[in-house]
Image (cartoon, rainbow, N blue to C red):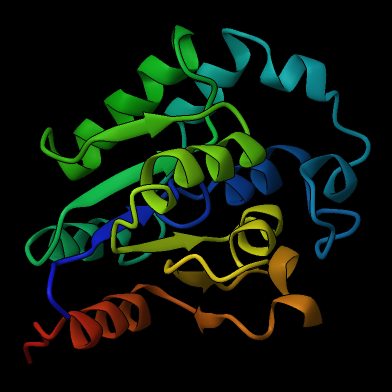
Length: 195
């Protein structure tokens, strides 16, 4: 590999437990394999959930996923890490998301807020694929995963396994189940694997 690739990490349900917090507030999802939160938790008032300041407070209370803090910092030692999230840019949720990343991961990891899963895909296509930038993209969202792998684009897309992305149409993806697997996979592929 000639250049060290960028490592784009999704925040929610790769680093921070968004669905875990939903479960603690609303109970077990009605359909955990659904592709959207609206279908996973059909009885939640999503308009209220995503309104400010309610959503910002929700984001503030997220807990890191096991191994994510150490793993993210470890990956940042071997390549440029960027947090790429569907959090709406601007406003309180954006501010809280950046504070959360700063608190848990430190001030040196940039955060890119896009507004939705489809906007995240568009951002990657505009800013990474268009310029043929070498990159890993680690995500759990089925829409992001399916959209980024529809055609050959040079990205190394990695599925962070979750019930909502356990679908046969995504089984062709490189898949990791936890942060140990993710960090090991990227270190080996970048050529910087250390015991």
